[in-house]
Image 1 (tube, each protein chain N blue to C red):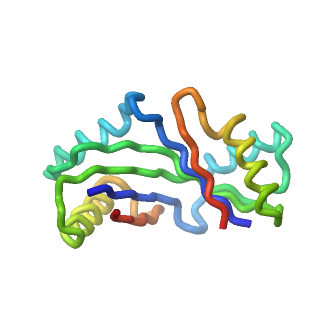
Image 2: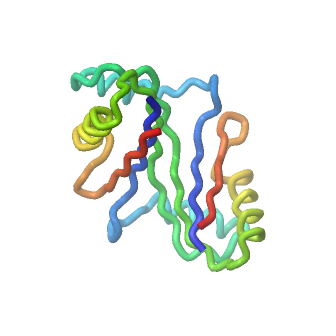
Image 3: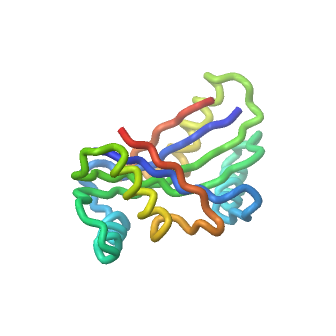
Length: 79
Length: 79
């Protein structure tokens, strides 16, 4: 089973990495960017075949390791 | 206009970050993970309103800065 996880900074949390990218794009001549936020994208292959169990396991992984829930949100997509 | 970009390592390229995450999850008792790949997720707000122009601009950004096309793939999603 393939799982996709997006970990993004919560709204209001400063994103220096995004700001750096925005600045660098500006220096390359790309204008008209009003906002950039950079997050993590994790793709996982699980041997689990039950959707519900997999979702629960991955939620647990996010809470414990993959995301810092104080400043980050996560989104799980199972396919 | 909101643009989402996924930058992922090409198949066959070693992913030490993914391996580290897999190892850490194993140490936390999560088993049954056959593969993990970690990539970048970039969300962008553009003032451009034309889909085609925006796609072309963002492709250009990916080629020039956001992705290392030797080892990474990118995927652009405009919404």
